[in-house]
Each structure stands twice: as structure tokens, then as C-alpha cells.
Amino acid sequence: MGLIVPKYQSTAVARNLLRRRLREIWRRELQPTQPGWDLLIRARREAYGASYGALRAELLAWRDSWT
Image 1: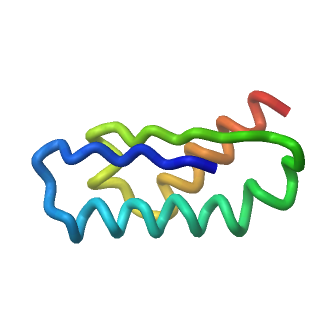
Image 2 (image 1 turned 90 degrees about the vertical axis):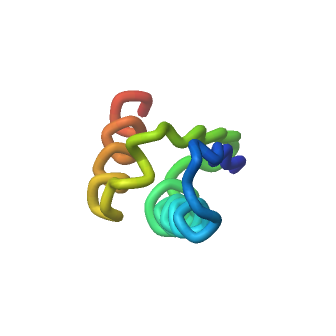
Image 3 (image 1 turned 180 degrees about the horizontal axis):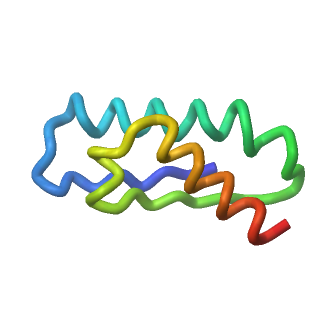
């Protein structure tokens, strides 16, 4: 899995929090169910203000649309 978390004039703390949240969602939800996939996630500006639950719901909806 690759992550692209642009600066979007946010702080390093905000970028790192978003990276940690996305990695945790990957570890818990996406990695075990999709062997053989390469995934690249590019965070949008609105992702910085999203809660863990909102990010998780969005990624799971994406996964369900492709599987």
C-alpha cells in the first residue's frame, strides 16, 4: 500500500495523524481481505478534517464497490 498525503497547507501533525489513520484502516480492514492487490491512496483536502469513522466508511465503501 502506498500513501500520498499532500501538504495542503496543513501542519505536520495533521498529516501524520491522517497517515496513521489510513494505515490502521488498511491494517485492520483492507489488507487481510485483498491478497495480491496493490493500493495507492491519495488523500484529498477534506480528509484532514474527517474522523476515523468517516475515513473507514469511505474506504470500505470503495472496497465493496470493487469486490
